[in-house]
Image (cartoon, rainbow, N blue to C red; front, side, top):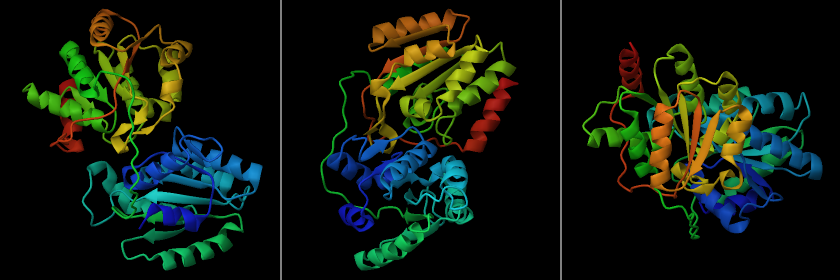
Length: 371
């Protein structure tokens, strides 16, 4: 189905969301049509953020907003849906478009399997009426469903279109680039060079995939690395939980800008506790590159100032390998909480693989190494 038709049928002029690879056609269409225009399209920090933005739009205009997200974001919307949008509270209507990763019977990565199983049930539990868009769905059927949805929306309730894999099409050409020269994989290679026997907690997406392959190429095991394959935005909190219990171990966090933004409150908690054994590396390419390259707001904010404001004693930003190596060496020797923002280009190898060990194996090996 052409994404233009879906947008036409829904009939809204305001979209906010967190990009998803299964909704790439919609994301690219919105970027081509609106770019980042706060009156029509906002890429938010997390899905709860989107839901509150949508509520504000409805309060200001009386019109129906649309929130798009991967189904992994359902957990982030439960609170604002249940305590803000719900018809027993403010009765704020909203259309959700949900990419269905891990749909039962469709092969996907481990972090999506259980989420895929409970996707529809969570919508039911939140009293959100849904319709699953499949390859068999016709434009006529979709339009009829939307008419039914309008009756539900008029009652101050919420509805959702759940999109199966490979359904939406968009043939426009949208490119996501920046002017940075360092690639994420080369940055992670440099980090690995300096960490030796230290621990690494890496964020979800391609960063963890690249770390895994770097260890393979180096002929090393993976027991020193915790690969946070899901739970976007929580790698730094996992690292803090390890660091305070293992003060004799140096913990390196490999984070992304989108992940750091998603739950930025974690930086405040880390800074307030100021563990001396954490080095927090934020690889900033200003994009949700793992799911297609759509922009984050990280190109417009100052991570160094934010980190210092949160209590990080040391925080720097680098944009070349010479400075990166110098800062990695200094952080290795420094006995205090440190942050290194690394400006990064957008893109990855087309043949980038995925970890060949399971999350449970990763956990067991990591725990054994800590012992």
